[in-house]
Image (tube, rainbow, N blue to C red; front, side):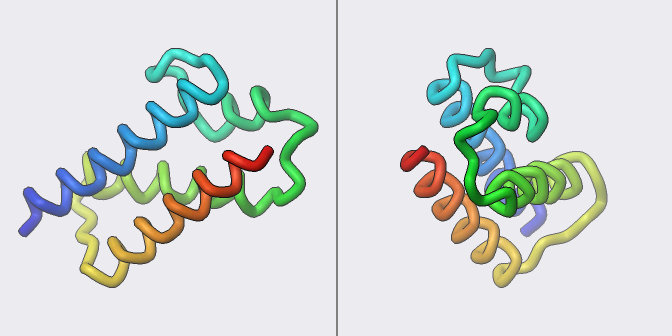
Length: 92
């Protein structure tokens, strides 16, 4: 249901915050696509990886605070993107 969907996106958001906070030594509350871009300046060779981070943040916000619904297919795609992002940033 909607509660589980929100919980899923809360977890995705928190995972990204924790990951990027630890990787770039940033306070969790300051993690944005722009903050990550600044922290990783010059090391990002795939701009689409950074764009995808922004898309996931937006998707999380829409579901967590809006009336947007996400189906299982969208959630599966989000989880796959989360894995890809972390894998990519682990290598830079």
